[in-house]
Image (tube, rainbow, N blue to C red; front, side, top):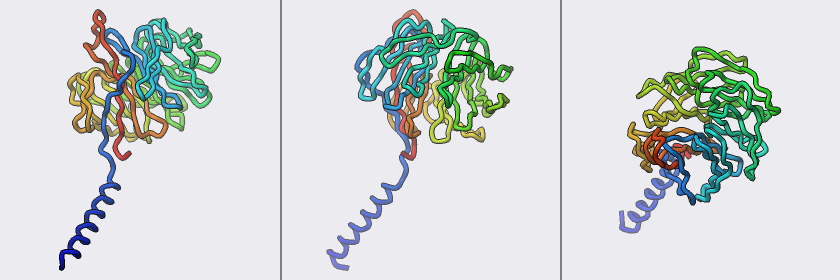
Length: 303
């Protein structure tokens, strides 16, 4: 074989290798969003949600909730919430924000005006998810319940049992199944549209306690605030670690190397290709000293 033929062969081989590499799936990465304003708190953090334009809404489990563009632009949306915990966005782009200490749900407009949607029968509301008709499903930590809130603010009981131990996070699939994470044990509980509950998975890792839950592309993702992991849970109950090494530190990079500090709120983008979580920069549950919230972006494998 002459040198020209050898060169052509090498080019063809390299092209084939490049094409094959282009068809391989990504292993996934984690990056930290840079905010234009600090998001202060004191040892605690609340929920995170996303609207249809990709804006994020982050609460600090104290008084405030911020609106965050993915380019880092950050504005304070609302104040005076008294324990701003879980949140969600309805079809009109309004924020539904739980007030843990106030035992109520606020409805907050896109310009920050807030009104009370529901303030009866909610004992320590945390996780919030929106239903098909802008009704809500809310978990109450102190009450140990899953509640339904109509668009008019009427509250009714969906489920209460020993399976719920400070329910903290909630997600809903297209069939109307609810998935609830317990803060006081490792159970992920599934509740069908008729209100029947069963344990889907028990994440027997680290300290007891799950935080929040989200659905992306047919998989469940659970934050583990006490032991610094994020887990993927399948509908058959199997689970695996997505990332984290158990140490409370935020390090970016490939999922196999990235770490996470006290992950709490979690939300997926509409395409199910990315997750966003909030973490804490500082000591968790140190209510005396100033700390900051971070927002981490997870590009899921295969995208």
